[in-house]
Length: 489
Image (cartoon, rainbow, N blue to C red; front, side, top):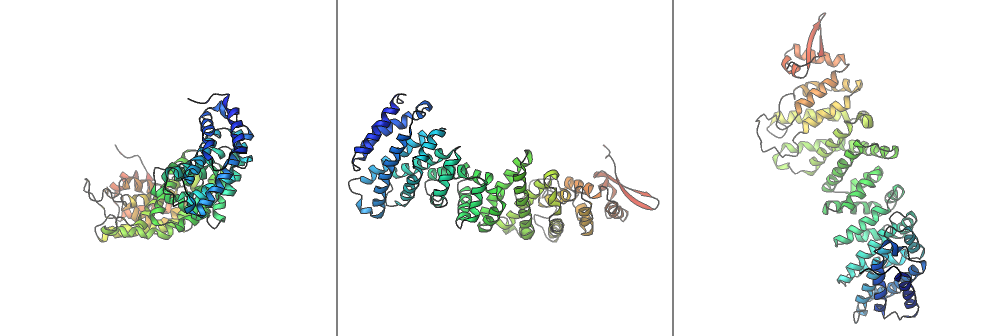
């Protein structure tokens, strides 16, 4: 049964009396009043009865136990008669009580901060991490409750966050992000997520261990995909600091890079569907420019998929993720039209389409046209649809952009796109994307229309194909023109 409303002041007085008169060796005498307070603080009205005096008593208790733990830490043989176990139990109960006292209570959060509880709590957690000779349940409980207390202490309280960040960054986070106990890792991620904001995320970039800390979070995302706090740290904080992401990306292995790109892709869906503040949009723009540069550097890795033995090549998988992201972002012309001017991007995409198309003709592979009209061994190949996405991206980059339309023609891209207008099991919807792109390339562009007209006149492209694309060639005054028309039903 929960403690009564009236008992909080009495328990506070009792605890204060014990801290004045009790010998440090008799730690268990504190347990009963603290346990009763822990229960009482589950109720909001009881939390409102806490006073500054109570938190000062907890500071005294924790400071005393900190000194004891330091002795055990320096000399493991000093742990006789279960003294460490009793100490850990008391520390755990103090943290548990303080955790409950700070639940959605700004007043108690401030009292705890003003009462000097942050510093000894962090120092205790540092020492507990080092007690590797003790594998007791009491140690794990003390760690978990301590991290939960810090999380509740700073939730919605900027002053407490500031104090905690100065004391805990980066060492405490580094210790517990690599903890073997999954619950401790979860609570540590929760504390880190709650602490972070734009200025503190920037601290990760300026501190020598900051990028290492960010790397630890990504490793958790890879290792523990169900741990939401780690994913939120990346998507809600790291992605808003493109310079940090660029530094971080360099340090990651390819598998971890794929995890990050998947998180970016998931976040993009949210960004594209909702209004975004100017600061956030600026960060996203910078991030997309960085990803476009990565695509330029690594895009030819996808040609490794011409070999059946390379279906799990992680560099090639990264190229596919990057292409997916670029297709998605450039589809939103209003927010991402600047990518049309990304240096070398259009040229690279047209060239890569040419290379993959040629590779598919030279030998049978995932880039070859398949018209089996049935499921094949390639159905689940990671590069299925790759050429279709390249054509899609070309269309996006040329939308309402006459200069890019001309570039595609000058690079010889139009015949390649027209050559991908047939059904291809290895590239679902490729013909539809080819239609989309050809329409964009010919929109208010007479030279591109003339190229297609000449191809039709010379028999390179038949009129049936153009008809399926909603286009037709017409001769007027000795010249050929391409114009749109409604396809016959």
